[in-house]
Amino acid sequence: MPAAPAIYVLTGCTAVGKTELALQWAESSEAEIVSCDSLLFYRGMDIGTAKPTRDELARVPHHLIDLCEPSQSMDIARYLTLAKGVVADITARGKPVLVTGGSGFYLKAFIGPVVDAVQVSAELRARVAGLAMSEALAELRQLNPDGLGALDVANPRRVTRALERCLASGRTMAALLEEFLKQPSPFADYEVRLVELAREPTELATRIMTRVRAMLEQGLVKEVEHLLTAGLINNPSGANAIGYREVRAMLAGDLPAEAVAEEITKNTRVLVKKQRTWFRNQLPAHPVLPAAEVQAHELFASWR
Image (cartoon, rainbow, N blue to C red):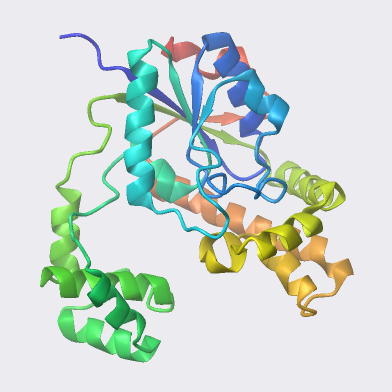
């Protein structure tokens, strides 16, 4: 049998240095880059997401960037459909595929199942949306007498989605999870080769602080002002993203202007801690390389 085509995946925490290494390796390998960053989907969200610049995008073909207006929400099901099409097209043209980004849920689409088969009607979704958090949680507990497992019951979105699926399927969360885990990976026909970049905490903290200052100097506040006129507030994922929510708070008078940089930096460091935990617990065994030392030509040397 012919060898399965490869998908190369480069991940790592925010500000670790993925972009430049990905560009260098893609250039040397004639690869095309597929983004799995959950905020690069939105047009106009450029500075606050550290989106690749126009010059960087011109160096290598990029995919799944600038898919939506800032007022629109992206979801994993749509992303998965698009990603499968893009990966198949790149592979058919004989080019290597390099997936890069640090958004765990979208990254996991290349590792295992992420979408179940439960269909939720618009009517059911509207009914659940009309429930208070306490009502939704009480109904969810009633449908799951054996408990809610690891569900974050303080997260309204998670509770709402769980209730929708239990009501639509007539199954408990445990039964849905068991069925979900039996699904094959969406990219089971590919060989996924994963590398994570890492930096020492003090070095990463300095890089985060430098990045935040640069974003503000480049015009992050004006970017947020423009996005708000374009309906950003209708997209919870974008409006509440780090960098955007702090500037929104400042514009609303809830955060002093002189505290914005510190608040974004603090929240980014919290995010990095969560990312590290997620990579450690959710990804299969993979090499972790020191970003400060590795060169692009060494990055995937053992894979070629």
